[in-house]
Length: 242
Image (cartoon, rainbow, N blue to C red; front, side, top):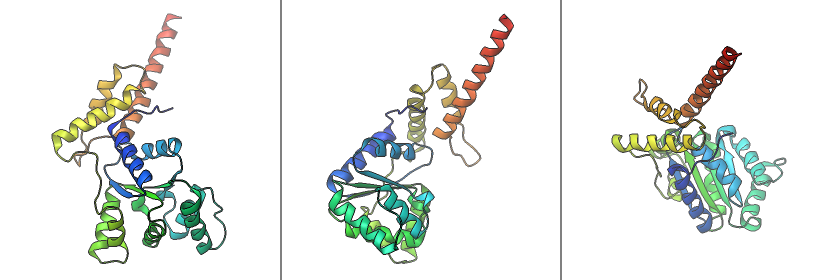
């Protein structure tokens, strides 16, 4: 069980999501992987009323996305495509109170599914909040679409405030400090042996061939590895005593 830490990432995502929900606005977060974005999305779904999450990495095509959207709202995902869309719009506009739709891993959506986002935004303008999240792939998809003048991309970007939100600092020194604090904050509520924390943080801060540091997935793997080592060491000592 991974305990929730009040990290800077979770704090910012909660603030963004609350703003979108309360004011029926839209925002986009495009940031590094392994900083806890998807974990924060799970927190939102579990703790925020009428927060509907769609994992776009599991529903990339147009029809798969619509069916996943309907299921997220608790609606029937069977029937004609247009009928499912109409039910979603009706629910967001007339049933749910201050709904918020969170699109996690939105960069994975195919073009036709991406276009549907503009349609839903237009149909729920002033009623529903929208929060789109992803990594570099989402930024690249939107920028390529705008550059190629593909229908929908510039309009959709405008509807999501015409900016990419970001939490991780860009400057190297600040970036290193951010990652150290992020990993330490998460480990502080998930590691029983606090002496392990500096060692795990140091391992995560090592850069790979591309110059990238490890994030929270790397930290989680190291926690499992070190705790397994401690368990085996403890068992060996007990056997020696016997």
